[in-house]
Image (cartoon, rainbow over all chains, first blue to last red; front, side):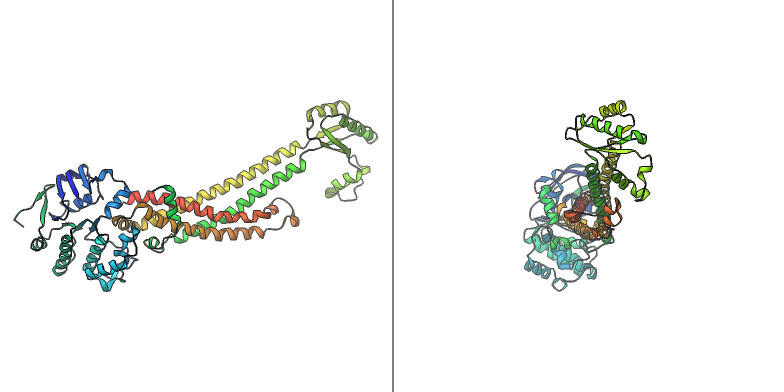
Length: 223
Length: 300
């Protein structure tokens, strides 16, 4: 689904990632952990073709990201849902329109029942008409998750999705992601919240990857 | 996506797509105002171009095919010289007709300067012979040589020294009008490009979000292009109406005469300003599309 082969990434000031080789199999659940600045966000950006590797190959849905045109990248992003810590919405549109944005840009409007169901599933059914500025951090994260999955993506990438949330809300979001994984979605969550990872491992067979010294390792029992 | 499909997507209304860009920004009025002001000026440039074209035709038509011979001779030799000139003209190939102007006709010619009571008989005024050339034309230089030999006081004026600079002046005016319209279009494109760039930069976050959720460049560009095209069309329509009213309010030709008062449109020419708003919209579409794709490549 997404594969890294001897990938390196250089920001100009030095190498951030080096010799990264990993494959995210369909239906798998991965955590990516590591200290701040280790390259977790860069790894995710490479996975959804926001960045191109400076060495090696990133393959998304069997296509090397270097061979993708800008339109191809857009099509890839319709199959990869992304949730950022600093959720960005279109501030002039209500939550429902923001969540439906992937459908709108893909010309697949008219799935209003799906939208209503999805907002209810993430617990935002009553906030459909609210503007993003009026939402709390947790509501914004759940809105972002709803937006990321409304197209029925094959892969969901989440970058510190619980970074601004309290423990209760973090667990709620984790539960949603676990449910999505049980529906067959491939999940990768970048986080440094070890408690969240421990909690997840009790719910799902998750693999934990750690970035250390620019390389990715499979984390062991020390978690 | 082909350019034709891409352009079609940018023209056809799409309410959902239009909503993704915030409804207005600080540059909203700039495009409308620029298109309006530029179209207002373009109406005058168009009128200038058409008027100079008409003027060139009028001057050419009035002077073409005619010439004048001016005979300066003592009063007692005037009749002889005139007869000699008319004889020469009869035998000159390319001359269809020739006649000496009467005293009354010459008095009428001088009336604007000296009044109607000029005692023309008492003044040493040259006699004018008016000739019309045939379709083959005549050899002006050859005729001058014959006049010099056989009627030394006669001078041929074939109007070319008037006609040529007037034709050049009219042609230059026509070119100036066309050039003005091109410059106006280029200035409008530049201003709209600046406004579009400002709008795109102000909406950088919107663009990033749209790219993140899978929007293609055509989709994002179209949302901006439609908006700028509509603003340019609106502003240009206002400018075209205002400019046309301004032209219509110019004094009529008969009232004052002269070139400037003939600046208005004639006949179907009054409908020509209607072509300017679609042209302005097309300029806006192309300028915004180019700016949008350039900015999209920079931003994402």
